[in-house]
Length: 332
Ligand SMILES: Cc1cc2nc3c(=O)[nH]c(=O)nc-3n(C[C@H](O)[C@H](O)[C@H](O)COP(=O)(O)O)c2cc1C
Image (cartoon, rainbow, N blue to C red):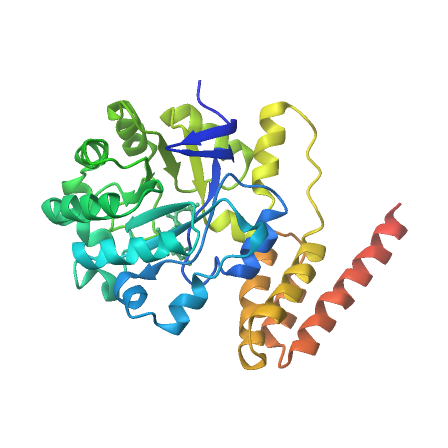
C-alpha cells in the first residue's frame, strides 16, 4: 500500500519524506521556502526558470535560483525546448548547489508553449527525448520530469512518458492528472496517474493534482498507488499540510498552527527579500493564499485587498488577530 513515507530514496538522493511541494512560478520564492522548511516537506522547488535566461545569466533568474543554507533538499525546475541550451543550463544549475533538476513538461501558458516548451513537449516526444537525454548526460544529480497527462483527452501519453523517462535515466516522474487543454479547470484524473504508476518498473511516480488535505492525500495514494505526492496550491494556503498528512498516517492528533502567525512570519521574510515598491503586492498575494484556507475572514480579506500601504496591511492583520483572540477568550 502506498502512503506517506519517512526517508525516501529518489535516485541518489535520500529525502526526509515523499510529500513534495511543487514549483510554482511567482510563488515558490525564498520567503515561501523558508516558511515551508519549518514543516519539513520531502522536497521544495525554486520557481521555474527558462533555460535561455539561465545561460544568459539573467540577473532576475539568478536571483530566483538563490539557495539559502537551511533550504535543502531543493530542486530547480527548468523550462525550454533546445537540448544543447538545456544541457548547459542544467550544468550551471547543478553548480549552484541544487540537489535535483526537474524538467517542466506541463506549463500550459501560450507564452511558454509557443516555442514548444512546457506542455508543448508532450506533442513532440522525439524532441522531449532529446531534451531529457541532453540534461541527464550533462549533470550528476538526479533529473526528474513533471508532466501533464497529455495535450488533450485525445492524446493522453502517460505510458510513453514513463517509458521514455525510464529509458533515458530520469530518476522520477510527477504526473499532474490534467491535460494541457484543461489548464487548471475540471479535476485532475487519478486514473492517468495510476496508469503511469502501473507502467513504471524502475522509477518512482509522484501524483499531483487537487490534494487539499490529509483525506485527499490518502485518497490519491489509494487510487493511484503512487510513490509520493506533489502538492502545489494547498501548500500556499497551508504550508504545514505535509504535517497534517504525516499525522494522519501516524494516527497522531494534528494541531495546525495559527495561520495568522505564519502569515506574519511570512511577511517578515518578504520584507527581507523584496524591495519596498514590490512589497505590498507580494503581501497581498500571500495573504490571499492563507486567507483562502480560513473561515470567517471575509472582512479581513476585503481589508487586505484594499490596503494601500504595507503598514495598513500589517495593522489589518494585527487588528483582526486581536479581535479574534478577545472573542476566543469570551467564548471560553
Ligand atoms: C500559480 C501557479 C503557478 C504554477 N507554476 C508552475 C511551475 O512553474 N512549474 C510547474 O511544473 N507547475 C506549475 N504549476 C502547476 C502546479 O505545480 C501543479 O501541477 C498544479 O497546480 C496542480 O496541483 P495542485 O492541485 O496541488 O495545485 C503552477 C500552478 C499554479 C497555480
